[in-house]
Structure formats: C-alpha cells, structure tokens
Length: 212
Image 1: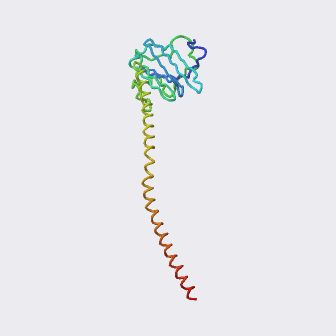
Image 2: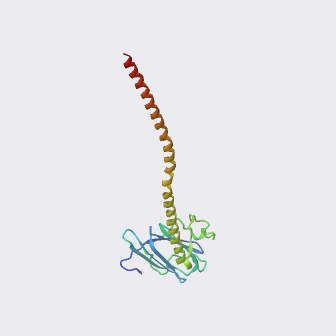
Image 3: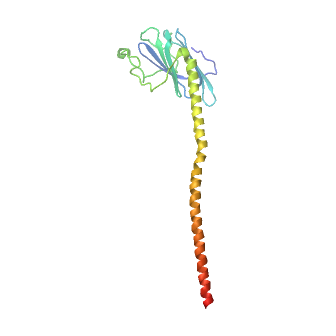
C-alpha cells in the first residue's frame, strides 16, 4: 500500500497508545518545511524535506479509528515531530492502521512509551517525560509554526544585540589609553631627571680634567 510519489522517501515512524491517546513520533532530524495534517476520520499525512540535498519525505496513514483533531497536539522539534492524537472514542486500538495487511516496514512500536492495555491506568501523559516540549494544537498548527519562526527571528534579534554589545566594546580601551598616558609621563620625567644627573657628572668630570 503506497501513497507516495516515486521520488519521495519514507521517514521512520514510531507509535504507542493509551486508552484515550495515540503517540506518533516521526523520526526525521533537521526537517524543513514540515507539514502535518490530521483529519477526523483518522487520515494522518506528513511531508517535509531533509538532508543536505533536501530530499522530500512523505507519509499518509489511515489510522485504526477516528480522532479528535481539536484536542490533538503536535511538537515540531529538531530531531523529530511528536504528535499526541486524541482518540474520538476512549477505546484500546488493536493496531495503529486500519486494514488487514501488515504495517509498512517504517512503522514501528515505540517501546519507550508503550504500556500494555492492562497496565494503562488512564492517567493520560502522567507517566511520560516530555522534556518540557511546547505543543501546538493541530487546529492552529500553521499559527504555531509561524510563532516558532517568530521565535527564530527573536533569536536573530538577540544576535543583533550581541553584535551591538560588540560595537560598544572598542570604547573600553579608551580608559586604558588614558591610564597609559598617565603612566607614560612618569618614565618621561624620570628620563629627564636621569639626563640632568648625567650632565652634572660630565661637568664634574670636565672640571677634574681641567685641574690636571
């Protein structure tokens, strides 16, 4: 079952579930132009570019059952895209994809997040360490991605501030130059004193020679 263009590649995908949620992680480091779409009937699509040559990657999955798009969330990170899909009905899915065939080779179980049905306490994500991920809702994903880009711009502004600080740094040596000037005058004075002392010694030597 293929929904992809011949030139597209499949990113690796891992999944796990709870009674009310499905966790999907698309493993694609440094993904560019990532687009994820989720439809109420359980159609999950993903596209992005990655790699030095910007190879296109695409996915289209028909999930086992319907989902609640408005309550589902997504985090687009540097190394992966992590989705928390809210099930339309709080029931344990037999598998991730509908149909009788075997899942594609790139779809794997996420054993780090997996629990068995009889071990599911219904505590939602309480047993997961999400590492402070910032999630956007699927309904406003475009805005969320835009906000992420805005944060990038903010980082750029921060860099600008850093450059501004760098511009101020050359003013610091002025103080040192002033202190150097003060110190320079002292050796000059001592040099003049030494020259005057040397002149006196020469006069005394000349008087001694004249007396002989």
